[in-house]
Length: 452
Image (cartoon, rainbow, N blue to C red; front, top):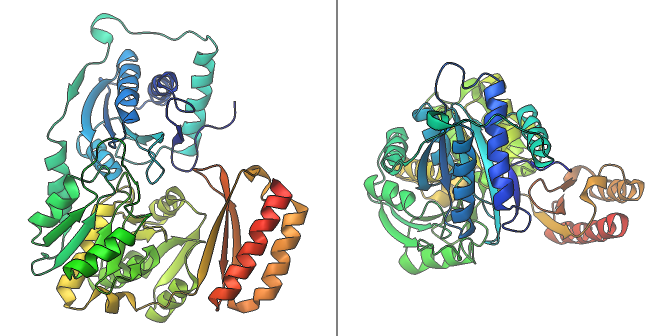
């Protein structure tokens, strides 16, 4: 069996790759692994289970709940809430395990399972590997001790989760949002309820789009991966800014009052300066990935803020932050982690803090984001190739070397296999957008030729 866990849990087409049987089996395996690790020792274990609005989440939630309860774990079912809400509730309620059913920004047919450890942190790679091994053993007939009678898990709905999470978000805000007009694009996803509620209570005047999930329309032409609707709505309503989430609301991208995109690097830059001003930026350091724009690095250097870079994936950003006690980190895609207040990327929290900075300074988001100049960056996704050979293909290495020589000191190249989708990502950064497009196109062709 190939590795099931990617950089963000287990994902696949629901009911094809990710079946009810797999969801049940992984949940049983997770319960057993955590029990063996001593997580449940001395008390009756509890898990928090949430999901995004995808139709497939309904049967996958049932499977996960059945698996956990059959393994003796009590379940608090919180319903449709963002991934960071499930992480927060796992910690706030003292649960031993959290489970989120979502495929984040992926299209509706996909779904995924993400496990959180006690405290709301993502499971370590070693534990995920152990869960896979136990799941595979059970799948091939290895028996396991099944509790009976009073030993089976009990299941109940925890309806207070919504209010608990919104209250937490509002408690973090340094100032109110009164006077701001904001457009929210909820991607017909998990934040369609909590995000407008939080922004409204914080004092903002709202226009909300993409907030009518029906189980089928999640991420469909809206949200952080499709910003055109948000840009148009900001201009139409004369808003001060727009905020876009993805399907599980662990991301935030923004649009300024002119309709221009403000990406994750720019959001990180704005928040880093704000946090340093409040003496909340530990070690005057921000953590980002190797995908961050070179302009972000230069802006942080100019501001006297140290930048630490990691492999792509918010889990690696989080690991670096936890290891060294850094307070702020994130990705260009809009995963922003404020570790003093969240254990994972939180799109609603990020959007609230970004809007709070606009309200506090009285400066337009466009002006705040201009602290950095984005170098032209082109990203090409190359599907239907053997992503496992990205680091071993001699032909591909030669093509990359040629591209790097052409770009010199004014740009860079990054090739990496996606951790969540079956494709290879080609990123090229250059001083000139036409050059970046030309080099990226040539490298994409090289990927197809070498790995196809």
